[in-house]
Image (cartoon, rainbow, N blue to C red; front, side, top):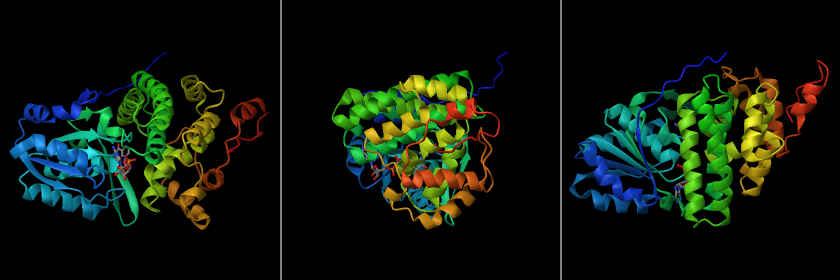
Length: 370
Ligand code: NAD
């Protein structure tokens, strides 16, 4: 018998090529008069176009974005917004930029409008992260959920292939973990499955031809769905490991997602067989973990922690931090099994097609992590 709980989130989405030009009208809808813009040095060129359209509503800009939202930097952004008398914050950039805007919105209690330029998906969620003392912590608060999201595929054509692939795998990870999340529900699962299909088409197309607006639109649509699924469920082991590798060791979020996802899927495959069937159908592959690895490889995303410059000597500590405290996960986690997963991820081994083997074997036959 079906039972589920689902709490839909508010928020307005405008999707389509050229939607950045809608920003002034959306600001008017919010009745805001002082707009503080958060962007990074690379996306600043896009933001300056928006600033021109805002005219005298522009209340200042913050561009000093660092990875993983260090607490001091977020506070500097909030102070700058306050000095400008801002009654609205607009982020134009990737997940790092959105992350700063969320903290400004939370602490200043002003609405957030997000214009994402990567596939991170943060713009759809009430989740925010702050890094302090070398640890990245995330929390949920409806005040950080953007009131409006403008998705403009034209803004993503400049995203280099070195960022497109990993960012796409970050979105893919939201869909994969949403399918076996504890809080999953029929709606989040449909959204996640459609997200995988869109990303599996849009990301390779965007890598083949970065200027292909159809492929970019499909990828951004997939990222929107991925963020929407992430927003209403909790994540699991994969995201915990990525937050340790990013927050404590400074590795780029998209890159670690690309490397870790196939191994996290392998780790959870036996405990989440229905999710694996959905992933396999959406990707058009026979084995979900192997298919995810092949996708990452085919789009030129990194497939090993070694290639990211990770020092193997820290893997014991990564394993320990990943289970302190243990995240919710469909399969119980402990430091020894995470260490084994990290070994596969470090060396970039393609996950073995082990789920079927483990199921077919008698008890004690093992639930191989790679
Ligand atoms: P990012 O924002 O750091 O962007 C990656 C790089 O791409 C940057 O150098 C940026 O300047 C560049 N870039 C962005 N858009 C570009 C464009 N259109 N053209 C050219 N270059 C462009 O990284 P990200 O992967 O987008 O986001 C990662 C961050 O988002 C992490 O901190 C992660 O934890 C967070 N995140 C949060 C949530 C949430 O719900 N809170 C969800 C997903 C990710």
